[in-house]
Length: 282
Image 1 (cartoon, helix red, strand yellow):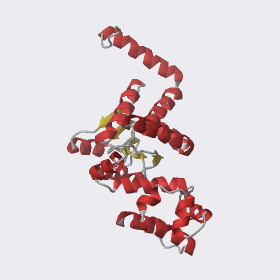
Image 2 (cartoon, helix red, strand yellow):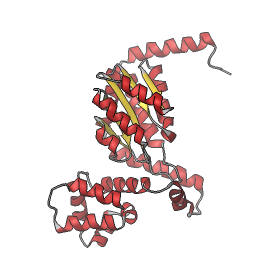
Image 3 (cartoon, one colour):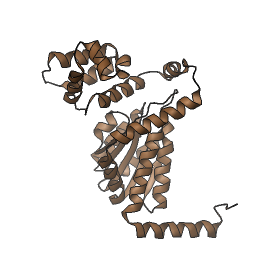
Image 4 (cartoon, one colour):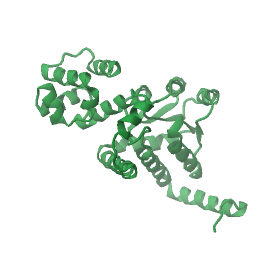
């Protein structure tokens, strides 16, 4: 895996690493698929070191430990595969797909509950709260949590817009962002090069970039605020459950920032729904 080899080389940089750390890195490069799903003890056996060396190697590379690094390796490995290959990877299992899918989402939420950087979530909420406007840029599956963030953000009285359509429209929106604005994006699995380039355009113009991502992607590296979420599904598409949960947390923080104002805005919204007959209360 050339991408993983280069990524690990970039993390090491000019530093000299010990034999144990080098053995761990070489084991990951030699078989990123098995390494991505291995425990620290299993990887240690393959590398010919002990589990403590695996943990130290992960920390030297900038991660809290092996679980943090293995998640990054796994997401990078999966993002390098074709959609067909990912489907084949999971369809070989004859277990109940419904139970598998729901069970996997539960495991992802449990993982996120202990690994989520809640300070980053609060920082993302504060960026939206204090920005003149926020534009959420996304493509594909992740338009779902993006739509929720934009829609409910507007319900709360914030200027939050979604851009998930034509590339020219997305470019125009990014060009209009500047100091005091927020460029918000979801960078999961296979991120389009357009979103990455637009994030760079917006940042150069002074906008604050917030990214929800499943790995330290190019967009995540650009971000002023980065929120890592697990996304490995049990099918040929990633799970959006954790991204939705984080989006809902951001919205709750926005609502609670000024509860009196939130109550007033929601009361006004209820009145407008009733007056215009928008909501069917059967």
